[in-house]
Image 1 (tube, one colour):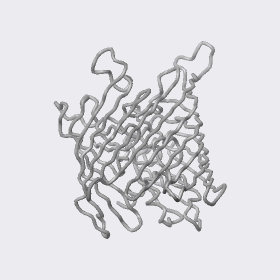
Image 2: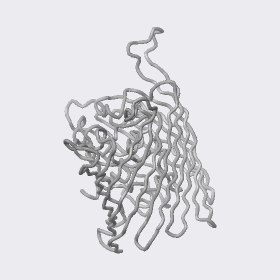
Image 3: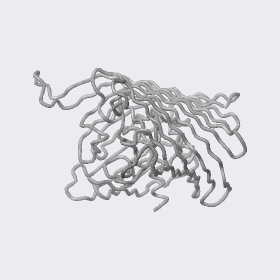
Image 4: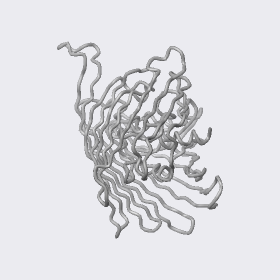
Length: 412
């Protein structure tokens, strides 16, 4: 069961499909880099049972299939699942993705097409990814374009703190690079999209049209580095900036989320996707990294723009090359951010921005079972300047309090 759980977390319903993911870096096959290293060596079975749960659909069972292929590239993914709770509408969910290499060699071009009707959301996407590697500097670069349609179809599955009854269509380019020099790793990514949001008019507008339409531009960018500073000690730093530009207030699923990944980025993961899923239960504090990554705050906080800086210092205390537990490290972190007042009112009246920060300590472990490898974090965000919107707000808490959270992914 543990292996099944970790497989689901690492790859959503068997693989992350290209929805929005502006904060992700990807490998040469277009897969998120955080999971590509764990999946490249796997030769998955043609069919694999999957199991998860949420409040609306109850226990959900299904089958995941991957078409076989001789090389490392993933040909595609098919997932069919059914909710078992009686009375749940949209009980059957279907997802399909097909990948195809348009050109091979040192300058690889790949295309991916996907369509889904999954737990109250329907959509489709098509993406192109051109990648090449500069052997002399150890850099892997990608340039791509993605077009995405996402629509809400059943509000019963949706967490109203994260989703509104609205659909969006967007298209735009993105670029990413990963440079490795010894143990130092530098990553950068930027994305721009132009889109249209549509939602039911309440009441119906005077013209009689049932929908309201709003154009928008969403731009994000990030740079991060991890480098050794002493034997067994690593320093990490990351800077993120993102903005939503449009004539109206952004719907919740398109806001720049300040605490971690936005709803489109977590849609691929059934343990995070819907209201009451396993890792988003009340009083369970899970951190899905992404965006400004201000990990001490609630995951439903988002606004028109945000800037975040993440700093970490990690000290390895144990490491081995065999067994379930491969590495244990102790660390300290500080997250600094500035966002617009849609996220939270400014602590000083009249300001057009809100300052946010958190800091704490944690334990990071690395595990391996056969060919599957993952990172686990247990963190204590002890200091949060706006404790009224903290992810974990104990009774009578103040700026300093005992707060905790867990994650099955690296912080960045």
